Image (cartoon, rainbow, N blue to C red; front, side, top):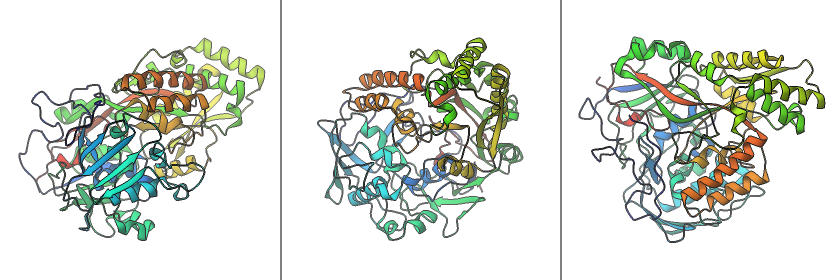
Length: 544
C-alpha cells in the first residue's frame, strides 16, 4: 500500500456521504474491501499476535493496544476509517451541521447488538454519558471534553446530548469544532447495549457489541493466553468478516511470535522483532509489510519527579534529548524501519512539519548536551542516582532502550539503564499509579487521522492519556483555539504553535516515527495493514 497523507476534513457534511474526503484507490474502490487472492468468504480461524489487555473490554476504558486490538473488532461506531485513513459512515446514515457546533446524527436503520437488541440513539447517548462521568474514571473520558456539560471537577451529565427519536440524536459542543466528526470512528464513541449498565464489571469481561466480531461465548477471553472472536451475525456494516473468526494470542515477546509465524503456527504478526529487521523481508518475501504508519515513540518525563522540576529539570530534559543519537540507533537497531522524530506527531498526517521552532533539541549534539547538563549541575547536582527507562519486557524494547541508555551514559557520564516490567499490563499499572521513578516509554498509535490526536489526548491538562501529568495553560489555550478553528489549515497552524510550547517544556522526548513492520504466513491471503499500523482482520481469508 502506498503511503499517502491523510485527507483534510470536508467543510460540509452531507447526508449519506463521507465525512472526510476519501483517499480512494485509483480504481475508486474502498481500499478496505478490495484485495487479491481468495474471491469469497472463508471459514478458517485467523490467528494474530497480541498482548493481555490492561482493563476490561469497555470502549471508554480501553486506551492501549492490547485491549484496542480486540475492542476494535467488537464494536462499530458512527464512522469507520479505511486502510488509508479516509472516513466512511458506518452506523451513521448522516452527520449534519450548519455551524460546526450542533450536529444532528441520524442512524442507519436495522443495526443491532450481537444479543439482538437494537442500536438506538439512546445507545450512543448512554454510552457517552457513562464514558464522560467523572466518578466512572474512564481513561477515554477526555474525548467527550468538547461536549456541553463535560466536567473535570464533578459528576455532570453531557447536557449537549439530546435524543430526538430512536434513530436521531443531537450533539452540541462548547464551541464550533470542524473536525469533531473525524473523531467519531474512535472506539471511545461506540454505543453500548442497555445490559451493559446492569453490571459494567461483568460486561467488561464478556462485552456485547455491534462490530464485525463477537467473543466466542463465555470464557472466550482467557487472561494472559488469548481471546477468541467469531463473526457477529447481527453486524450490518461494510467490515463483513471474510474468515471464520480471529484468535488474538498473547505473547511474552515478539521473537516467539515471529518464530510461530515462520513455522505456520501464527497467521499474522504486526510487530517484527528487532532481531529480524535485517532479514524478515527476505524471509517473508511479498508476505512482508514495511510501510510508514501514524505511530511515534516518545520518552515521557513524569512531572512528579523532583529531579526534572524547575530550571535544572528543564535543562536536564534538553540534555538527555540531545544526548540520544537517533540516527545511529534507528539504523543500527531498526535497520531503517524507524525515522528520527522532528516533532510530536507523524509525517503521515496532513499538516505535519519538520521545522517547528525549538525542534533542534531533537538533534544529537554531544557537546551541547554536556553543556546543558553542566548548567543543570550548577543549579542542583544530580548525584549518583541512575536514570531508569521503564517499559514492558513482553515486547521488543530492550535492544533500543539499552542503546538509548548507552548513548545517554556515554555523553552525560551518568548511569542509565532499562527498567523492565514483565508484562505490558503491569507496566501500565505502574505508570498509572505513579510508581515509576524515571522516564518511561510512551508509544502512540493514532486513534483518528489528525495532528491533534497526537497532542491533546497526551498533553492537555487532565486528558486520559496524559500519563506524565503535564499541564500548561498556554498549550491548553492553543489546543482549544485549534479545536475551534474554521478550517483544518488554521487548526494545524495553531497546533504547530502548541508544539513550540512542548519543545520548551519537553514533557516528553520524541524519539522516532515508526513503520508498521509486519507479515503473514502462507496460510492466509488478503492481508493489509492500515494507516495506523493495524491489520484489517475482517478482510483476511483463510481456508480450513
